[in-house]
Length: 354
Image 1: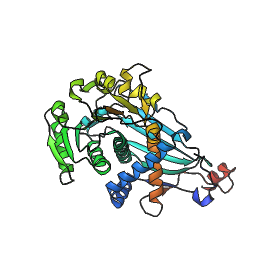
Image 2: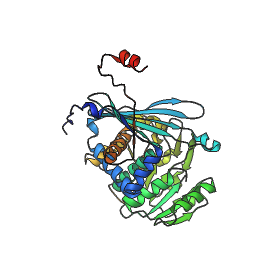
Image 3: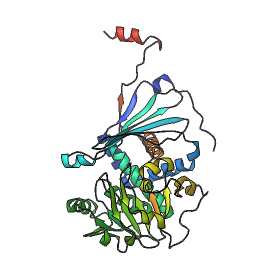
Image 4: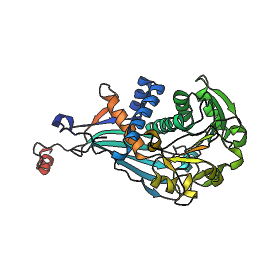
């Protein structure tokens, strides 16, 4: 694929930076409809996976502490540069705070000027769900309608909705160690086209499921799924493990599965495969999407998406929002960029401001 061409922006295009607040992000979602938002995000993500080799890629830069992690996630396609700031603090829920918060920025490579700043707490939940469902559309067994949701926190309803919209899932089997979390999911998804079953254990949740989604928050080497809980033909959407020292699956499940990842150098450090040797075989999803490598080859195959979230997905989400807000009032212009009459006279601009 040829590299995108860049055009020189006019001064009027660089004076202010559009900012999408949480309130305006919600307005954008409701304006489009959450189903169309998820479809649109999935399409943008798939498009960028198809041009994967064009991107400048790097594993996220992480700063770990005893209570959580703060990360920067950069990516560039040579025309635009984007990054996301995101944290992960499981203890925050006990303090009435979000486990994950995020914001992101996309900039023009030609000038280096930012062209969009936006909240990404909501947007990350949406893009994560869109990515999971886009992958499952390729890897899940044909006709899969029933999904086990193990871990019913903030991501659950987004995942469920994306799987319904993109994959046709209409039956959910729900389990969480905290029954109130499961009750929240039932309240939020009642009347949304699902057959909902509350389960008393992970084992019960996986009964009859063709897709299993694991999404727990605690930063620990946990075993949410054991080998005996996973039968042939299952697709596992393992999205809870996203940093060193945090896993959800017993390693024997990995040994029986064909494992698919976003960006192997990052997933080997942060994903389920951190349990495995460095040469453990995995397939990057972009290779499946462009047809270079196979995805699901048989109905008896166990496919496992070891999803940790990668910067190109955030790039896609930022690009989607940038393209959707232009003719709306779902943003405010921020005076973020110094704009002196003479680009060399920044000091003079400061003096004249007196």
